Image (tube, rainbow, N blue to C red; front, side, top):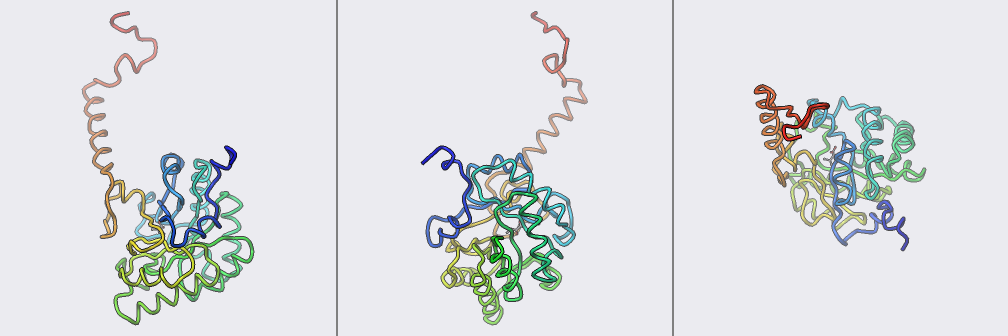
Length: 276
Ligand code: KIV
């Protein structure tokens, strides 16, 4: 294998082939510095529209625009070399028609260099998924708790609690998989449902509040680093507490500026050191 093959990005077919194999590792990334840090460790970098809430302080993902997704997607692609980069299609850019979905996806692919797009929805989006995949645009599906439908769902709570709701989500998952998606995010469902869908569909499932049985897992990076405190869903495990670290660093800096301890001579130009 040549050096360039060793550093080549994870491809869509390679990830699709991971069904039932080594779990797929996915984290969100919205910026170049974070993408650079995560890239050596993950298979997939998801430029999620959660950036609306995490980066822009919005109440939901609904106001996120295609231009925002493209700017952040391009930054993440530029700063990574190994991971497959998937960019979310934002609300309103794809639901109207399969043609609108193609136009939005084509802009994402051409202007960011990402390998795939992600869209939310089930049976009603299957025709769109087939249309995009037949035209060279790999699609990651997203079923269960779909944040762009927060107003229809009545909030961000786990879904598929009763048998009828669970059956609808299972039908959605099969429809998206059969339409040609290469992976499927299952968010915020009862664990047995995510496990069942993983058994039923032929493509890798990526859980977030899903099940350990899923073929991969995704978390919002700022959640798992303890940087985003607005709310903390049950499915988030904190692997670090960077929020506290940032607060402590800011407090130390503020104290040193106020006491004139910072900047010291070593941080200034043209100042002779005491021992010189
Ligand atoms: O927008 C996002 O970050 C997502 C993940 C939570 C799956 O869709």
